[in-house]
Length: 105
Length: 124
Image (cartoon, rainbow over all chains, first blue to last red; front, side, top):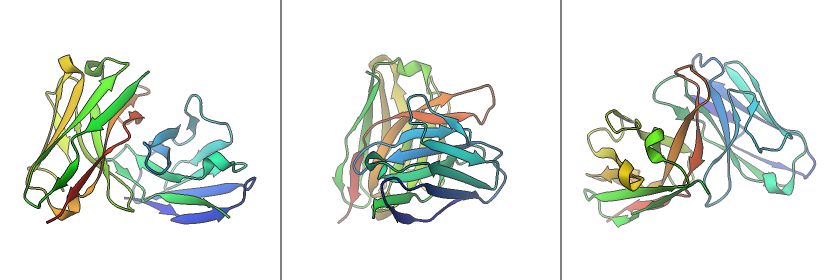
């Protein structure tokens, strides 16, 4: 089970934002982060806890090795307002966190 | 352009059936394992089912086991999800997703291409 916190947050453009995902069991570093905008498909941002997917802005970063993992947006931009999901691929069935909605303040 | 497009969603009564399709373009479907993931109204993503590259191996979430069947037609570059005995709690947007392995570990995977989803509503 993956528990994300917070479930939602409000922030200003330019803020540093941190989202946490806690694993209920050991998952090593097999943790991915996705961004999803309303009505759209999820988009991969980070894989293996800290590897940036090709083409994704360097203002996104991931860290952690269990049980707590973190997604950080260094300077929030207007395009970053979305819902963020973590996913573990170590234990079956693969599970996602419940999502964190990032809104404009 | 690499793309997945789902279709087949709609309104169905409890106990009914639907068949979802996922058309792949811009890549060779037979080279990839594929997954279905769903998202209930206002809820998070939930993995539903997966199928290996030639369709010989399938796995399901406990919540859909025995009711849903994942299959594929590689010649037509299409993935399917047959959904029978539908329940209210199956109401969701259903996404198909391509699986990518980034190294040799059996755990090193991510879903790198997703469709935009098709909506299934189960209601009387």
